[in-house]
Image 1 (spheres, helix red, strand yellow):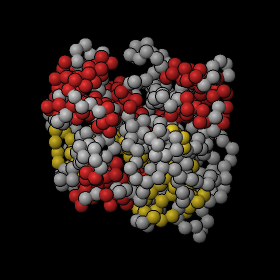
Image 2: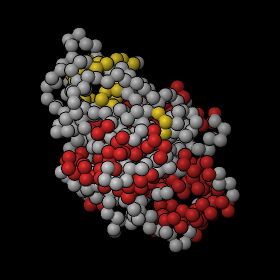
Image 3: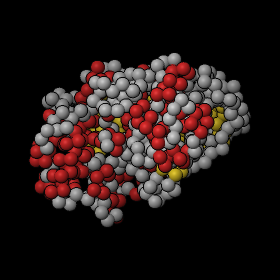
Image 4: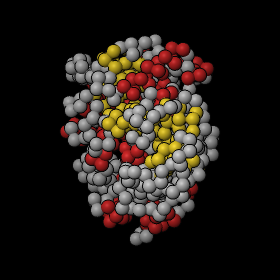
Length: 560
């Protein structure tokens, strides 16, 4: 299994996953409308006596107040991707005529879970909604910064309504925060030659399939751009950011000409942009043995949908049957020549991307979340695991990694493998990405090293440290009651820093100016300059994991 397809976002330890919404009165889909609809004067303004009514380009939405925030939940931004729109490119929502009560989250996108904590299959195909949070009392002309977030979950799980992002986020006391749902798994990332041909017929740009989830996020972003001023925001201060798979979507927005001029900054948490390289159809010269369409053809065969009627067959299938069949498959975006013209690594190396200031970072112990269950408790098991990865990657000699990642160096065989996996998939790709883009735009980096105090209350998790997704509650400020006093302070520092990346000269409390990644000469000179966020005190650091990343790079690991 390709390592990059293991990118996940932690299942929330707190809060509910599913929500419900009552949809607006909708007109028939109109494929000819541009993404986001008409950004002019709304045809259906809010009633004069409407409380927290916003007259958006698609109709009036009525919000409510929660604590220090105003919020609008479950706002549709696209037509339900069902029936003829299943597996199709996103169709922007048609305007509604009556005010929409935006007071409940929309359904999460259809997904499966095998943890036993929630139903195995849950959610809905009718799920393309977004959520808006802003400070209470925001005036129409406030011109606040806007932060547009894409959730993680390996492109197969998650939602913009998870408590981690959407439980009265303190982040929205300083800016407008928007989260959204996008299609997941096969519904968002199934490619097929017949779907690509159909898409070309509809859009005339060469044809795309397997990137439906990316088009969803683009449509949600377009809705926000069209309505930025109406929301009380400044369209010239709009940052796209995401975590894990959501950060890879942010990479795709950076690399896509379809998102040109739609945002003014980008921030990536725990993702390697260079893993966006899977070809839609042609594999020659790509290093891949099979394409996204090849996998889609196999899935269609497994579903009994081969032949000339494959597309109509796939659309007629029960959604749960599709989920059951693809439960062992991984999904990710592909290089379709439409949304993504070239592998992301090439785009960022050449400077052929949307040139806005970029911030990217990772957590100190990313790997443990993915590898703890392996139970590597002996040195022999560690050597076997490292040798297996080396063989899979085609490294002729595993000795260098075996000598570098030892139980003596990291405390135990399991912790050594945790570090190796984190370096391979997160830390080293992020550092290499920052090195590449810093040649073209202002690039800043961060390391999150705080081990959440609550880990000490869970036997077996005490040594997890700053694991994958541990920074999310700090960034959003959604669970301050679980923080120590220093952690609450750190959360506030990080919230201000995230919003501040849209400033011309970003700064961090306790530090001052947030230095550029190449402030000390970049990877060649000092391994790259980062801001380290920790409850004991944030600071500027350099050379993080440098020797380990240099080793992986010398083995030919394509890191960004």
